[in-house]
Amino acid sequence: MGVQQEAGVGGEALEVWIDQDLCTGDGICAQYAPEVFELDIDGLAYVKTPDDELLQDKGATAPVPLPLLADVVDSARECPGDCIHVRRVSDRVEVHGPDAG
Image (tube, rainbow, N blue to C red; front, side, top):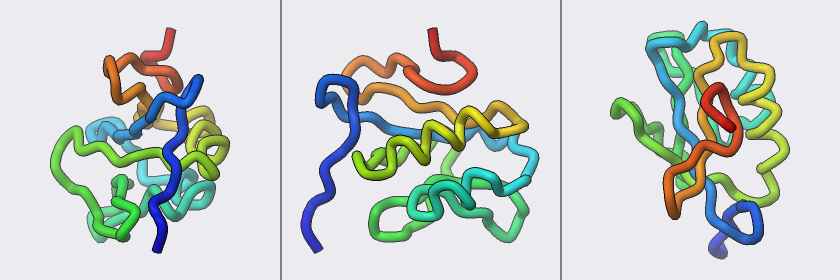
């Protein structure tokens, strides 16, 4: 499998993380971008690696693949818990989500 190009503003890499403390378990994110988000047995959403590995550590981030950027942004926008954060890898500034400027 080839390396997926990561998304970014002006070509910058983006990453996404979920604040499980605020997650409502609605699963909207997993419907929008099942390649990036998954509900675990605990009923909460987590990000996962391109290899499908669920990242359950608090604050764990996953890269946002360029073809999925719109789906990930829609997930952050539609999330009832406002718990999905998309930020630039370079300076960790949030570009989509509840803390975006």
